Image (tube, rainbow, N blue to C red):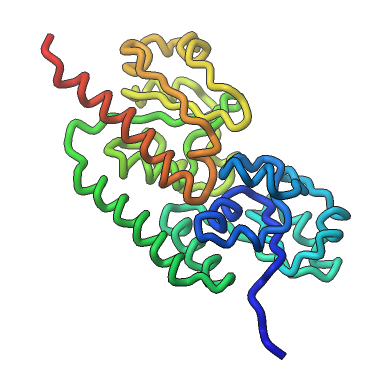
Amino acid sequence: MQPKYPERIVCLTEETTETLYLLGEEDRIAGISGFTVRPPQARKEKPRVSAFTSANIEKILQLDPDLIIGFSDLQGDIAAELIKAGKTVWVLNQRSVEEILSMILCLSAMVGASERGNALVEKLAEKIQRLQAATNPPVPKVYFEEWDDPMISAIKWVSELIGIAGGKDCFAELGQMSHGKDRIIANPDAVIERNPDIIIGSWCGKKFRPEKVAKRTGWQNINAVRNEQLFEIKSPIILQPGPAAIIDGLDELTAIINQWKALQTEPL
């Protein structure tokens, strides 16, 4: 008997789908999340079998996967049902940039693509190191909002990417919290007190409305609002705990922060 790497993988979230495509192992994917937008061809080529907190268990089982990959406790019930059905399930829980890179290494090893996985991680790590080496003052204070009602601040990997891009997360202590409920900012005055220079919105699943943010009571006195430094980064490229956050999300963060820095050096 010849042992084999997984050949029919169902990815319940986008980041593992994107990673397998980047590794050139997309033929192993049997099903994907309905929220997948990266890479675009995945939606055309692969059947969609799940949302985020729900899944079509019958459809997944019909695909006869030999590996199902999920993410976090929010998919725990889905994972449990599939395990009870006799399937092999791997649930990830990466929350930091380092853990995202480790996920890529682990996934690449699981499909026999360690060499390509190592190369991808090295490329992403080199990008991070290059940006860190290029950072210089001034350092803007950044308020990153991933939901508006209730207001939820940046998760850990986003908080870290803000630092890599040359900024400082206003609520870095909340970024250490894994669950969104623990990153809720109950009192909007807390943002006023920290007075961010830049506000970035990434409201998962809906369009960021800077004009609504600017009209919040008392927020007219925040530097970012007074200087019109409110921006949107689309959630698929920054709130996905995978390659996208480092490939494209980090680029957008860097561009926003560098634009703010350029304004500080313009002559009056």
